Length: 91
Image 1 (cartoon, rainbow, N blue to C red):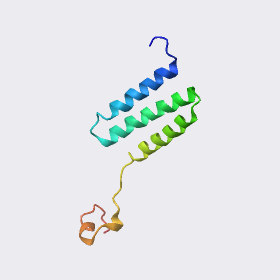
Image 2: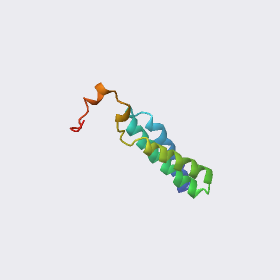
Image 3: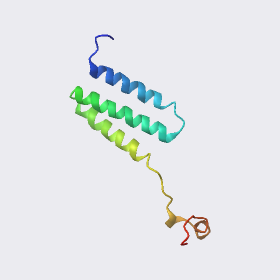
Image 4: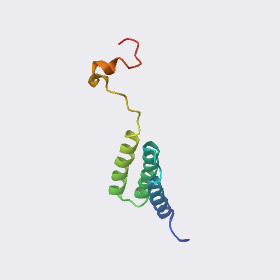
């Protein structure tokens, strides 16, 4: 493996990181690690001039980051009994 180009090392690192991500039990951590792996895959794709790899992993990274955003409860769907337990002093 000594003679591998840098892009191959990036590809192997991305592969290893993606596989390791499944060891995390916390979903947010798993997705952040997968997003990082996808960014490495983007670098690999750019170095190899492989636009399908670049586009696919930009989408994967974007979705991984998007799915890590904090979720806000949808108060419009809460029943009247549920609204009384919210922390909003106005309700």
